[in-house]
Image 1 (cartoon, rainbow, N blue to C red):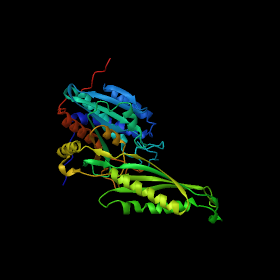
Image 2: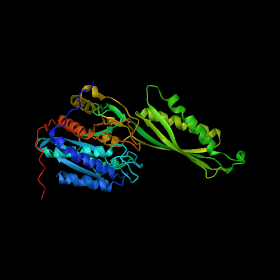
Image 3: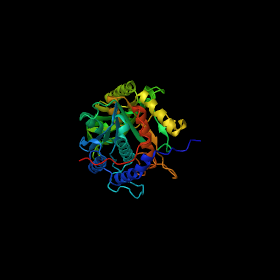
Image 4: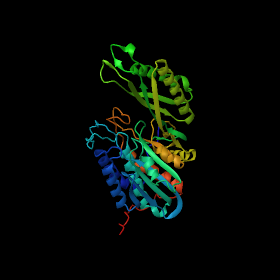
Length: 404
């Protein structure tokens, strides 16, 4: 039987009501990628009230701030994504969004945890060795928010990077942390089949791109099953197919798009090579032409030393039986931060208790247990204490005096 869940330190407990309130406020007013203007204002107001250093907008709708410790030490970066998804919420929560955007992946929780963490660090900065920079990152769901913040210099002087993702698929208090890849690389692809259109009653006079596309889709299903070792991981999905305007017209073109998920570059290279060979062969047999475009968001690759640190801290806090290794075929642009400095991205179990069904991320009925917010803040504090050799556990919970 798993050990009881730990009780966060008094400082974190004192911050929990406000953190949950801000989570619910952000959830109620969810905003899509690159449109997080209200979200940005809420974050800025919180951080300015707590008198963090260098509080400012970044990458249009993002925010950065710095907690500067009183003693020398490493500079860490804590990242939290802030955007929502284009979904009509069906949770029935009292604070449900009704504007066509929904926090269906826990980003409202990530933001609440990071705000509580920033406040706790600021109020105990006299004993903090080093500094912690915060990246409240926009546009994770559409990708691009991380790159924009990096281009504006957020990684300058950063020694290590940390971030957590709420994970409603696992029980509250589980921690999933893996050395090496934890989130897959996501390759978006588009294939255009170019044939020769004509009347649907005279298909012999055409090169039908719809038929060619159908053969390509079926043939691509052999890439993973016949070109990837069972010891390796790859996913190839065609999720979109478009062709034609009417049923009695054979079009000139058909377009399909989809995604490839891999963890290792050599696997991705092999999948792309084999996919191109298949598309070329099928289109050639049908006397059609093709265009194959693709772009890749890299995998989230954890530094082994940082992953071991998080596993040890989480094991001491929750019990070693709650710490697991896992890989996720989802993708996350936290990858770009991890390319610039060693660090770790880990998952914090947050399955709602006392419900009949737990809905997956990106579902219109997704929800998580808000008890993960103080637990996440406490775990983050312990990780930072471990990294900086600081002891922040017994500090007063006073607010900082307002700056002139």
